[in-house]
Image (tube, rainbow, N blue to C red; front, side):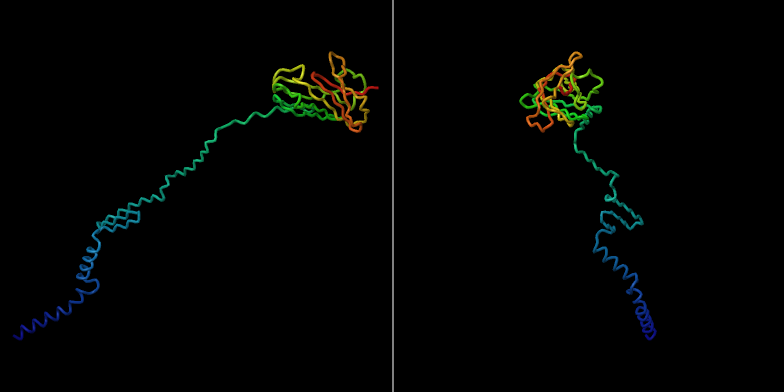
Length: 240
């Protein structure tokens, strides 16, 4: 009987000594209990950390890192398509450059306006007025002429004022012998002269033909004018 009690006491002491190993931190019993609690709390044994990175830790040693980083998948296509649907329109050709001493203007039908040419002795102006506008599109040109290149005028040429008046059909058509309508031709001169003695003349067949000339009503205003229709070379001269 004493032997039995001694054996029981030894078994009891061994159980008491072994108990902390089974229930302590890291013991098999505690690990099993913890694993059971985790399994109960999360029916998915896969550690699905679904932050759109799809990290599937299947516990089988297979770390399937299926990271579809769509934020980084820009496909290299930066579609900056700035399609403004603006139709292509070619730039109009630049007008031809006129030589020095030449001015030109294309008048639309019914258009009024002035065309001026600067010369050494003054300025020549062709004025198309609204009451006598061109009935069709026409081009007028004023060009400087060297006085030495034309026959001598009936009197002294005022300030070397010799010029040519040209006209064309349309803006670039055939030459016209006359303007489509009467126009005012005037000269503002910058040299001393007697307005009443100034005359326009047009070169016709090698000779000068006088054109009725009107001085400005203000005698102190150095300006004379005439109503013209014919094209050709004109001169402003002074009678004796």
